[in-house]
Every structure is written in C-alpha cells, then in structure tokens.
Length: 153
Image: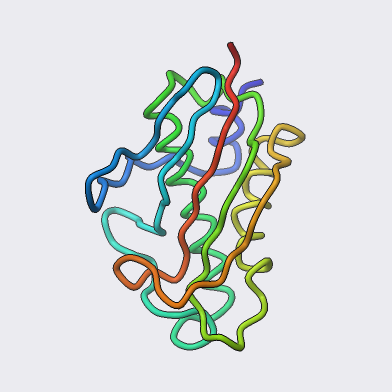
C-alpha cells in the first residue's frame, strides 16, 4: 500500500522525530515489529497544550493532541524503517490522558489518534487499544501515545 502517498493526500506531514526527553530511543525494531516510546503532542518542539484534560485543556484540543501524538509516533516508526509504506498493521495503541479523577472520556480523546490511523491505513490501521487516565504526564502534556506496528518482512 502507498501510505506515504495517502498521508500527503490527507494534507498531513510526518514531522521530524521529537528528541527524547531522557535516556531512551524513539523506537526499537525487533523482527517485524516496531515499538515506539511514548510520544507527546509536540509541533516544532512545542507542546500543543499543557495541563489536564477537562481542567485546563478542553476535549477538542485533547483530541488534536492525540492526533499529533499519532503523527509523532509514526515519525518514530519511520526512523526505525525505510518507509511507512512497509507497515503491514498498526497492532496496538496505548494512550495516556492526564485528567482529574472525575473525567471519564479517555476513549474519546484517544479516538483522535485511532481515527487518524484509520484514515491513513484503512484496514491496516485497525488496532487493539488502551486509553488510560493518569494524574500527570511529562512536561505537563495532556496526552501521550505509544504504538506497536508490524512491518512487512
């Protein structure tokens, strides 16, 4: 499949891989799988928003953050392989949403990432997923995302 072309058709750009914040690498390839580290909603080195969803960050902005996290995760995947056209399946997405204890819409936030992956990869974008609420994330980010991708052998 020509996923790189599809990304362009959607008017999207895969960004440069955000630099790690600590002692880790953005992605690791083992066999036909690529595992990403958690990706934050950076655009050009700046977070889209800071704070907890439903407290300082509204739901629509959080969804945009999840979409950007997915693009950043794809950048990390691409750093471990030659081209995103080599992706066979998005296997698993784990999304973390920083929110107060009474927030209950974590799945809606992470749908921002899941729906974007569906737009890009179609059937190959259907994945297993977890959407987890946490009290805080690195640098005060509202959303963090990691993924596992199977690539063609």
